[in-house]
Image (cartoon, rainbow, N blue to C red):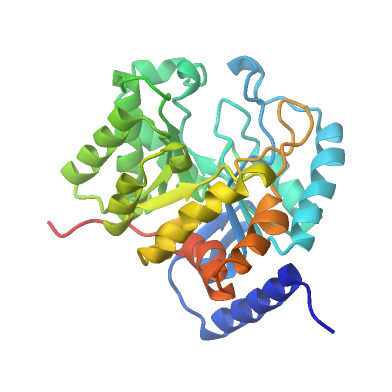
Amino acid sequence: MKIPIVKRFLLINLILLLIACQENQNRGQINTVKGSIDSSGLGLTLTHEHIMSNYGKAITATSTYDSLKLFEQVIPYVKRLKALGVQSIFDCTTAYFGRRSDLLEIISDATGVQIITNTGFYGAANDRYIPEFAYTATAKSISEIWIDEFENGIDGTHIKPGFIKMAFDDGKPPSAIDQKLFEAGMLTHLSTGLTMAVHTGNNREALNLQIDLLNAHNIDPSAWIWTHANKVEDDTILIDLAAKGAWISLDGVKASNTKEYLKRLKLFKQKKLLHKVLLSHDGNGFPSGGAIRDFNAIFENLIPEMLENGFTEDDINQILVENPKEAFRVGIRQTDV
């Protein structure tokens, strides 16, 4: 009997994961909401999703959820993702627009999916989710808040962040607060080894600023993820930065745009740079209490198309298993000084 394409891929992925665990490759740790794991234990991973967020609400209301409705909607959906093979999800909802690590832990317990939360502030959305004190604080004092979350836990819990999330507005020159937050992120990386995932999109001025600051602080590009890089139409710059070691996050997959992603992934494969690509949906399980914005199209739509268009199971394993564990493993990454 012929095994369906997606099930066949998931079976191969499970075998590869077991082999990786047996080899005990200690490539660094990852903090999940249930504790630290070896990065080899991430398995099949979605690197940019929102289990829930209150994006759009006032900053004073973003940490409040109807937990009963949240769990009724999100837990069955995350279980569905687990049935598709998902073992880990990086949750990109930051403090001040809906991060609730305590609720994420309950969802992780209920579903068996490893969830990784973040530290950092979200500087897009016209700065509406930047706390007021950040404008007068120094980059160092902001970084100390984020470092404290890494060392001691978030909001009085035992839960520690697994990455740093920051953001720049689309189509706007970086402001003083944008630069300050990114500088705080670099200081946090140099102290904790957490990777910086930065919402940059097609903002070339923000991109150039980040690259200049990373170079000035001798931070290797592999410590940085270009989030929403899928919004860039010119592939040349994506290929160039991937070749230099940066992580290129193509995180807007939908059932309706798989042809577009297939074309772009073919280019990365041709350039032998699939090992620098992260793939996700930017979905949301509970957007301000509304209907789910799906994050299952990679498995139900994109993977079957990839396997029918010259990609191998090893290619898919590289993108969804190997790349996340390398991109997010805790470790300070500096260039030779």
